[in-house]
Length: 557
Image (cartoon, rainbow, N blue to C red; front, side, top):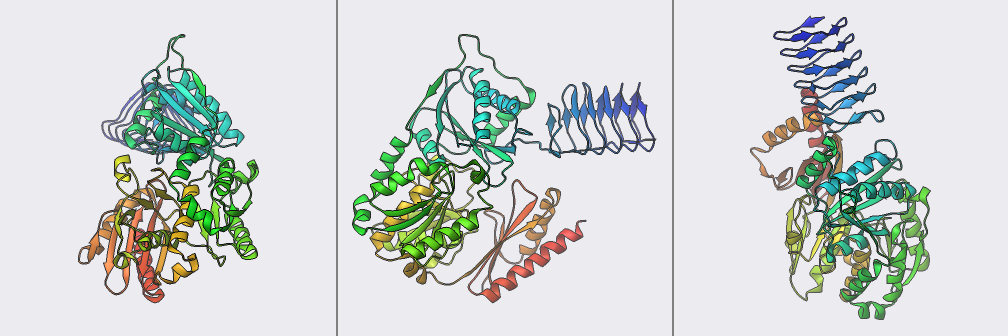
């Protein structure tokens, strides 16, 4: 055992090969073997088992048990009588308010970009959903209305009902639209009086996870201030409880797609599409858009073959693993039926993949350039477009009727979004603000047909007019604690070069092209984007910076 200076130990048993850090105060506790604590740790009525490591300024003032092989970050606070099971990692500045049994990691924040995502019925249980409902209700005035929706997966239904109980207990009313796609739900939120919305869905990335998505009254993901307000109440369990006669009501709403559909058709030139008699192949990926999109196709007189327009929980849970198969299936149908275009609409309705009249799947960057090219060729007025910094620049100096603004896509306000005609990104999400400020794959698909009809060209003909360019996106693993160092090294590398810092660090090379590095906000990765006019220059630039990044990471080991 080793005690560092100014450590105070009272009524405590300490095992072999244990190191107690400087300035620690430990009372009424049992510390087992091979334990290391950081500086200024305060423990009272705590049991710490073998081979556990704690960071600096950790506090457990009211009793807890931490099992073996656990790593605790700096500034972690344990609430009263918490149990942490073996082999866990607890992020710095976390507040541990409940037992940590399942999973291998406790995050300091339960939100990631306005949503909660965790393993169904493990980290994200009915009890946790109820606490979340109580937390959300506690920050909203009594009597307010919150819109709730879900997909058809049984896990989403279960968690929504649990959340609903917690919400009602705070005196907040619920407007339950039951099953709805995200564009339909977000459109209804934007035109009604609800001040909040929550959507429950099967994760499109991981079949073991459920996502709970939170939106403000403008149908945009809640901001970090709202996230922190909810988290503060969630961890402290300081819920508001309504009296027996103030408990919230449930208002059931049916046919929510009607208002969405009406406005959808009002903002599309239906007559010009009807006159063209388009043939379209559509894959709905067993999603929630089946109740509205086939009806839209009929209303605009598009001949269509619609694939996977039925509910299947097993397929809904494997969206991304089956995506390539669905894209090929749709491409084959386009070729066989001689269709003008093909669409793959993601299960929740917000993302769109496009297949050309020749059966070729467009990459997300090419699809974005196609929308911009079409708006420019319309020539009926000037269009204002907002896209991310990493989007290709190949069209920037070749546009007559489109003004391109670049920036971050995170944290945008409704008033800002409404200042643009079109917004797009590199993850297959497109917004035409004449209809809604939220991404909508269904609307983008029909709008694309309208634009193609007005311009009078096929997709394959338009693609010829977009100059060839090299574009590459690489994801490089980078531990969270090294991101700051990596960004500093990239900044140093950019000092004597033409660089910009709107989002990440972008370095321009006159002949080669440009390179952009952006740290991932939520995962231990950085994103490296490269654009060049030729493959050779692009590959050279990309490989140069991949080597630099790997070298910087090795230097920081």
